[in-house]
Length: 240
Ligand code: ATP
Image (cartoon, rainbow, N blue to C red; front, side, top):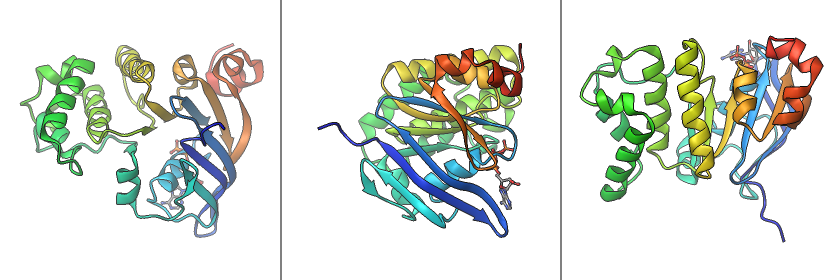
């Protein structure tokens, strides 16, 4: 028997008042998979991630984690289950050091040796953070703060990492560094759901892609098929 997907959304519906942000979304992330969630502004990508982390109420459909329904569980429960969320806009603690920000990412853990090992692992993945470990997070560049936000989420030892626009506002060189780090984590077997406006960068490291339009799927397929899709290129990939 095949194992159930790590995460499965069945007919997910999320509303903000009269606005339906996600309408009947079916989506799966299997263990070890990197799925890119693409689409224009306002398509419902961030809302989907927020619903998975129980940061917004789900009004229809179900959220299953390893085959068990978890719809509407507490946010803390989603963290305990192994869902790490790296939100849009980074939200690092500006007046705390890089090291403290990372330690706070391990707030639910008690395994000191494991935490110390993961700290070193994060510094290995993002050498810029290692060089700046004593600096205040607020003094880092935008790209470095993005790396810190990803590393902080990793300190919770997630089985699934939700990433909301990690390339937003970054210079191309830093986008490449962030994407290379995500590709390395994928190689290590970490499962990820990656929301990106930069569809090309996301599909280049993803296994599959799902394109949202007005809260439902307009297109989905393997990353290679989507990268080769002429219509998608014209709409989202920004190149001919
Ligand atoms: P973006 O890249 O702009 O964040 P997105 O695909 O992530 O786009 P969402 O942020 O999920 O889209 O927004 C989906 C819809 O829900 C949009 O119509 C948006 O205006 C609306 N929306 C999002 N957050 C709220 C909120 N807190 N209150 C009311 N409406 C919201």
